[in-house]
Image (tube, rainbow, N blue to C red; front, side, top):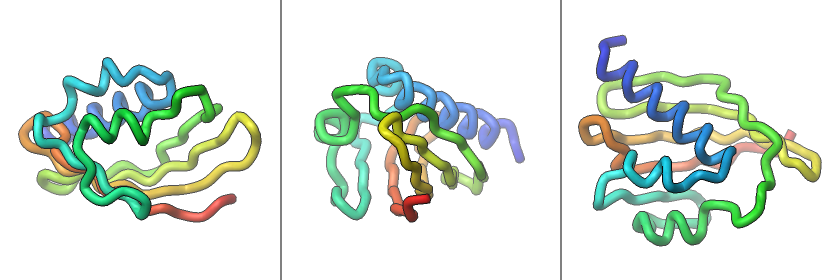
Length: 114
């Protein structure tokens, strides 16, 4: 892995830590101006919609465990297990596309509940 790929993996780790701690103010500067987010429920929503729709208003996760983190050129692929405070957990995979050292696009692929 080259140094830029290492930086990108560190950014992804910080993204997940900020999400868990509910600090969108930390994530906002990590994103490009034309950032988009997609999931089975969201189709290329912009950064404003991402923060409004995808960031929990209340703490719902006990922890998020990154299980795989792989940099491949401008993309970082991450799989993780999220544990909910109310019980239960699930696994997802995300492909995070970078433009330089900023996140330009996130595509989430929902996994299964475990």
